[in-house]
Amino acid sequence: MSIDKELEAKILRYHYVEKWKVGTISRQLNIHHDTVERVLSQAGMPKIERACRPSLIESYLPFVMATLKQYPRLTGVLFLYNTGARAQEVADLVIADLTLKGSPSVRIVGKGGKVRHCPLWTSTAEALNVLVANRQAHEPVFLNRRQQPLTRFGISALIKRLAKQASQKMPSLCEKAVSAHTIRHTTAVHLLRAGVDINTIRAWLGHVSLDTTNIYAEIDLEMKAEALAHCEVPAASSTGRWRKNPDLMAFLKAL
Image 1 (cartoon, one colour):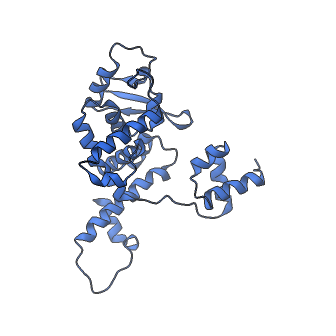
Image 2 (cartoon, rainbow, N blue to C red):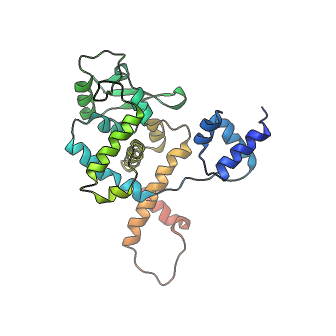
Image 3 (cartoon, one colour):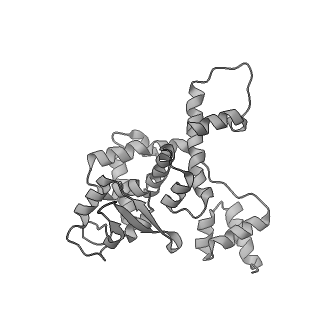
């Protein structure tokens, strides 16, 4: 199938000039993700890689933990951290998607209508049990204070309010944009650190491409390299960039 030259030019301009991601381009132009990928591949130029900022990812864990400790029944934040779900996925959940007995899990409908199932911690299942008690299966799981369905914008506003409160004890949060998506990033990195296979994390988060999930592996390597640098013995001569050292790379991956 041929692609219109004008459309092709737009895709290339958005990606290489405007620095838009593939998903953003496909949504903006109302075309399939694969079409964008094909145009970029045929152009023969490398795709723009997203910058990894490990220090930002690392600092969100204290916020998540402090929030859950202060508000142990704040089910929305607990659910976000447990599942790594996107804000829209959480907003779209209905009670029928939950399995809270036996082995607790949730059915999540992600991008493109793709369905995945995520296990739930016992604490998450218990909190959800309280939240959905005596309600109908077709009702949304999460409601706002007016008992209306919570939207992704409501979820975003909730996270921002909590981050503002937490910043009083963690001033570093004042300089960071905390959102539901940063909790998703945090979940991904902690799954990786717990030794979960990268393919399992891809399925857990609902990523279409393994390349997206590999960003978290890169983040974790950056963190380990920074930690290793603090205890490095000064050498007489430089050995080059750490990425080019196969022994060091093998050691970091084994940590």
